[in-house]
Image 1 (cartoon, protein in one colour):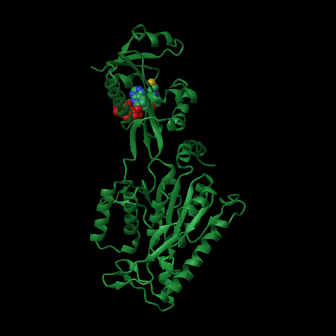
Image 2 (cartoon, protein in one colour):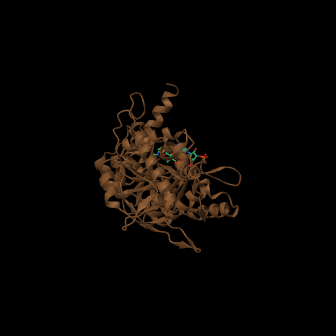
Image 3 (cartoon, helix red, strand yellow):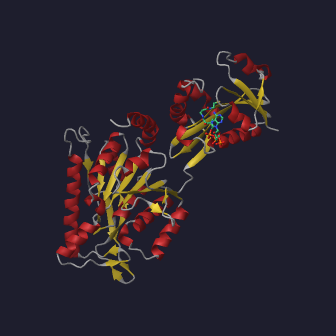
Length: 441
Ligand SMILES: CC(C)(COP(=O)(O)OP(=O)(O)OC[C@H]1O[C@@H](n2cnc3c(N)ncnc32)[C@H](O)[C@@H]1OP(=O)(O)O)[C@@H](O)C(=O)NCCC(=O)NCCS
């Protein structure tokens, strides 16, 4: 295999993403265009892999181009109002036929398990059902939308039950009313409502483009809701074809964000591996729309111990940090601060009070993918501010390989004899760390 060391390195580093994603609910929108694309089989493999890694998946498939083609073939005119199809009784018969057939085809591809294929041994089950209650959209601007509906309720209990059973739930853009009628919905709306109702961790929207591109043609990897709204307004202002996927996906992402789905990802259905790249690499492949500051510096909690261990174990093995057992970390977690990004602990540092005046900065570590971007400086500043608030006037640090970094942050070298009593008595002469101190006054 070419680039084997790189592959092994990448695989090792993906463990923190795997842990962050496990047992989380992701709702994935597969538009009708994606189902027809040659890359669809790769998407199926990647979804299967996520399922194997313990991600709880709800797939929502659309059917717009397939329905358009079928209506045209049947000689029925496709009628739209503000981007929404007007579904009459005759059209609905075609819609039902197409969606039924697409859902069955999707079940078929997820059932494949040929030896030597990526899905061999996956043993995966898809669940479908009447999980979406709908109501008619009604008359809008004087136009009766007939059997075009909107989502009224999502049967979350039934969906959760299947997700708990390790099944993938497959939904489409049909909903059912208590009066026994069937309504044609927008797949984007179904995906958004399901993500909101399930309190999903992510809404993943496949689009034809790689993501959102700025005015200079550069990919935008993250967007706040305000910036996403600006992009959407610009798309509308340019009167670009609203069928091109971006506008619907951005509206869905914005709606999800405003209703507490923390992260919506817009990624390409045409790009092989886009889903894996988005979820398992630092910068992703598409555009993330996130309502929250997706990186936060905060005091650590007991839930962070697993993430902390993953971050510091390689540095302990390299002799850069002293070894701390899980038990010790649990006991000392109150002294730690972390930087969390996208559910992953990417940096940590601790402040141990030594006596009434002095604290020790220890275990400062930034994940190697995130070094040299000021996070170490930010963490140190946060610890110093915390030390000051706690009434300390001096901090010390013992380090073997980072002396210059601390010198540049205003620390000065001191003798071991100048260390606070408690630290002096525990000093490990074999490790031969350099001692530095900084006054906080
Ligand atoms: C040392 C460490 C905490 C710095 O954090 P960071 O977020 O990467 O650093 P910042 O972005 O704040 O600062 C970057 C600067 O520090 C320099 N730097 C990084 N590591 C350094 C080191 N060991 N010695 C001296 N300078 C260092 C970089 O070259 C860069 O300098 P530049 O701005 O002139 O280019 C981080 O690199 C790390 O986790 N290292 C491994 C663990 C470790 O050594 N911990 C200290 C235990 S006491």
